[in-house]
Amino acid sequence: MNINGTDYLMFSNTSGNGTVYLVSSSTDTSSYPTNFTPDDVNTDPFPECFAAGTLIATPKGEIPVELLEIGDHVLTEDGRSVEIKWVARQTLHKVYTPAERFVPVRVKEGALGAGMPHRDLVLTAAHALVIEDLAINAGALVNGTSIVFDPVETLPERVTYYHIETEAHDVILANGVAAESFVDYVGRRAFDNYHEYIGMYGSERVIREMQRPRISARRLVPAALRSKLEGLAVKAMQLVG
Image 1: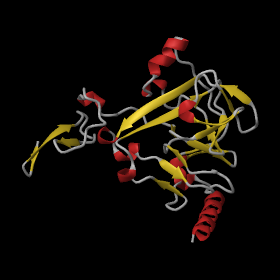
Image 2 (image 1 turned 180 degrees about the vertical axis):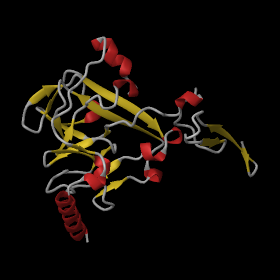
Image 3 (image 1 turned 90 degrees about the horizontal axis):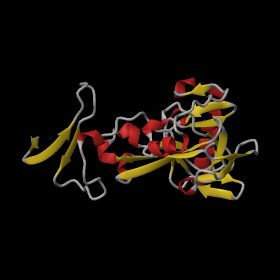
Image 4 (image 1 turned 120 degrees about the vertical axis):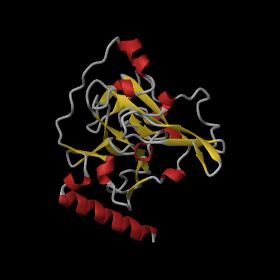
């Protein structure tokens, strides 16, 4: 496609309701795969994962999620040590991924209470945090102040997210905040290293979802909890000011 004298390579899908991607000769593609095809446009289900650098509590102390391996142990919210069965990994490319899928949620330090998190926690919008015995998707907690979507223009061209699978749908600690471990709400096939899982275990298994109500929209967050978080946000802004 030519727009104002510039040639663009355009990719779309055939369903009539997809996202159109325009890549011109001036686009910085140094970080993109060199063998790009239309199949590289990411249409997998939304990932539910932690950003690199997220500190996961383990019996040996907090460890960045990207350094954890199968067979390591992590700590649950109630103090148990559980074995990692799989570390799921998914890399997204900004130019190939719709913005609403690419941008993560940033839960700023102290947004959920003192030391919760103890440093900014960055994770995908569909990843649930466990608050007052509710599994609440991070995207449902966004308030524009203490919990925000990272602006897409501030993000690198490529980001990798990680998820931790244990034997059950557990509550682990990420930057000091209770967060869900992997549950096959999004299939393992959506992750880059799916074949690693199949190679180890032969087939997928179903993980029973934890017995907590799941909240995926802000309007469903209890009013008392919304008010509490808004109060914490005001206090945080006053401290910064």
